[in-house]
Length: 260
Image: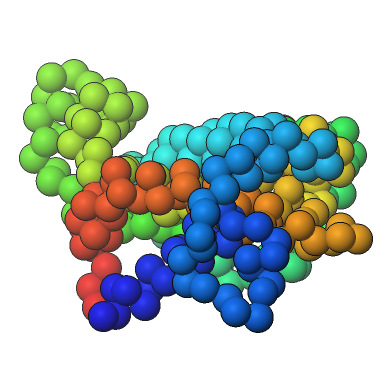
């Protein structure tokens, strides 16, 4: 019963997205419409006011690049903090953790000034590069690598591998489950980001799907069935990613080393 209740909003997206305006707003609203209007997809992707295809492509590019960037840079930082001897390692770690306590609104304006000065407004660089590193992801990687078997690393050192070789050839291949779990979290967060893309993507050629969805609500006339259908289209990539990697999500979180 609970599963049905949770799935009801998704059904309403499908039902209203494939219905007509009259069927959505009629007083005798029906749970199942008489006819499924599949031509609504053509209407949505052919709407000249909202570049749906371009927005979807931009969202895929931004989400994939930010996810890969976070996995690479944050895993390197986490591994260095967990395994490389350094007198100030703990201080650096505490500084990274301290960034998690700073509200995003505090860094929003300085980040915008930097991106604007570099000329990255309405540019994918302005959307991607500020999200290539995450203090939270670094924290999770550091916690995971603290519990990584040292025997494997010691064997790699005996074979002549340095810190980089050990990380790339031993640690990463044996941590793919955890990498996949954080990939899901990072991808969902990047895909759902709205405020930063709204400010940076000032030209419609650089809109992400979330910005494109907002234009349906700010237009003088709201096309209701297109709004529902666009929302449905926007969540399909998230559903596919989550279904494909869901088993890694739970397994990866349990391997972070966080004791509750």
